[in-house]
Image (cartoon, rainbow, N blue to C red; front, side):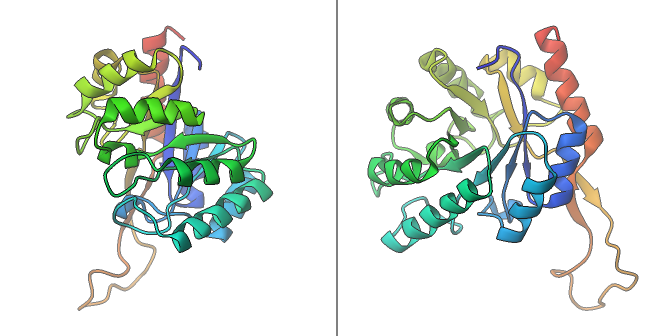
Length: 247
């Protein structure tokens, strides 16, 4: 793990992924449905992003919203999605599974990691719902994951900064503990100091005006403005990390 670390950007579109790259992000986590916590992206989105992106591409593997206790059929869906990432030449996958008691689902994780082959593996924020974060961290390390994405078992990384710092100390360079959820240019510097983490995860999004000339008079839930990764926000966050590391 680089001591300088960097910024991973969660992107749910081709435009957001390319904005992350242009802004200097070290890596993209591609997903779909970011406003709902993120799901596995469509095959078309993944294929086009893989063709156009020159920085490392990791792909979120999550078949549905809700908890991270998966059925046999859902595990098979995830396995096939992982295999697709291998075929398309992605750099890594972002996984997470728990059992009904909040423990890391070792069997499911090992099956998915086996399917990933040589791809890197990040354990995602299912970690934050685990019954015992310290025990879960050791399980994630034993699985061979490169990093864990966490908000410190709180809604935001800022709220969970104390636990994140403890996890960074516990990991002791065995894997990267990467704060995520609510990370922005407004709190990134303070989070780096409070947690001791080197990698950070954020969407760096800003509003994009709808291209539609006409708005529907009765339906607000469809169409309209939307959120997309903003190149300048990425640049500001990257600059904060580079300045803190003396780069």
